Structure formats: C-alpha cells, structure tokens
View 1 (cartoon, rainbow, N blue to C red):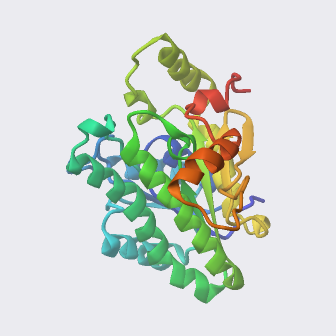
View 2: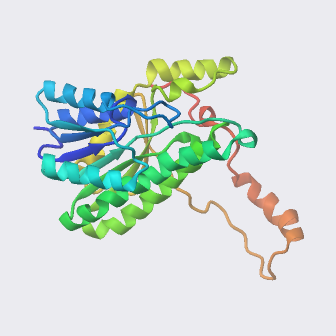
Length: 305
C-alpha cells in the first residue's frame, strides 16, 4: 500500500533533478504519473526534446508502475490544459500537480536584460499560474486536489545575482497562499517547497570565492534531490488533507516550515506621522526588528544533517 494508491499525479520538469525524483517517488507510492518535461537546457529558450520525460516514464513502467510522457512547455496555458486532459483521458483522472519545472538566467540586477527577466518570470511564475489554472476547476468539481509548487530561499531569504528568480519564486508563494484560501471549502490544497538540493540548476551557480565553493560542495554532497521528493509526495496525499497554505523547506534530512510575513512591531502617533518624525522616531524604534541582508548561509549556518 502506498500513500498515493489510486491517484494520478502530474509532475512538471519531471525529466531531471527534483522533478524526476518526484515522479519516481509518486509512482513508488502507487500513483499513475504524467511525466512532463520540455527537455530543454537550464537557461531555456531552446527547442527541447521529448527524451527526458519519455526516459523517466519508461523507468517507472519498467519498475511495474504506470506512467506516460509529455514534452510541452509549462509556459503555454493551452498546452498545460492539454496535459490535464491527457492525464484524465489516459490515466483516468488527476488528483495532484507537482510543479518544479524551472530555468535560471542569473545576473546582477544592474546588468540584467529584459529578456532574461521575462524568461524566468514566464517559466516560474506564469508557469505556476498555468498549471494551477488548468487543473483548479477539475479539482474543485471533484472536491479533491493538491498543488505542490516550488519556491526558493533565493526569494524567501535572498541570493545576490538572482533578482528575476527571487521575484518569480516569491510570486509563487503568494499564488499558493490564495489557492489554499480559496480552495479550502472545496477540498483543494496548495503548499510550497523551498528545496535544498544538487541539480543541474544549482550546478550553474558561479563560484567566486572559497565560501561560495564550500556552499556549493555542501549542496552537492549532502543535499540530494531524492531527499526532497518524499515531502512533495506526502503533500499530494489525501492523508495530508489538513496541511495547506504552508511554506516548507527540505534540506538533506531536515524539514522546516517557514514563517509567513506578519507584523513584528508597530508604533502609533496620535498626531500622525510626517517624514521628519518617521526618520527621527519611528525608523530608529523599529530598526531593532529589521531583517538583515544576510543570504541563506546566515540563516542556515550549520551543516545539513
């Protein structure tokens, strides 16, 4: 018995990295899986290939599972709608969507081109809209459905050189929150995972100093894609029906739930504020509650377990 017996799961970006591990793990837990992957490069923009998705689907079938492949792009809403219909027609339904599909086009913001900004937003944020919009009405009609979307500590905490990626990934967090709120009366859940894992996307991070080299090596050796997949599968399961609207992180053998933005301190001035009084009184009083500009390493300073 698996936690996804009798369920159908669509996994985007399922040909490599985290997506591949999610597809394999879902199948091991009893799900029929539609493996989607454009088969393109990490930077995107190329024609892609049906090879990665087909290879993973074949691996699932060889292990005794049920899987089909799709190589369309998550940036195309009509193509994603066709994926949903493909799952329903060929696999008998759809109960969960796992969406780790993504690209990277890193660069300092003052040097970033509009094309690199648009490409990352298109795949990560517009792609998240497409996969959720294409499935949400079906989920609401059947009073069951789970979205597992992916964010990043690049957005939650920050990472220099990834403004486009961070903006998109924080947008995904907001989207998931509203999906969870609106979906609650109809059995539709949505959660977000910030993964720590070595993938071909992480392999593109430029190593500029010893500290960065050490960080990348820790990711490569101690934080694997297959350690992220069980959380994605668990969140797909009806047994996790009470979990929705949350932001998780998976880091090696550690699992975290993140806080979400809430006021931490406030001041009132009965006569109202002007710029001078804000500078003189409010900002100094609030400064002790500011969030510093430290990157992920300052928030997770210990080695992964």
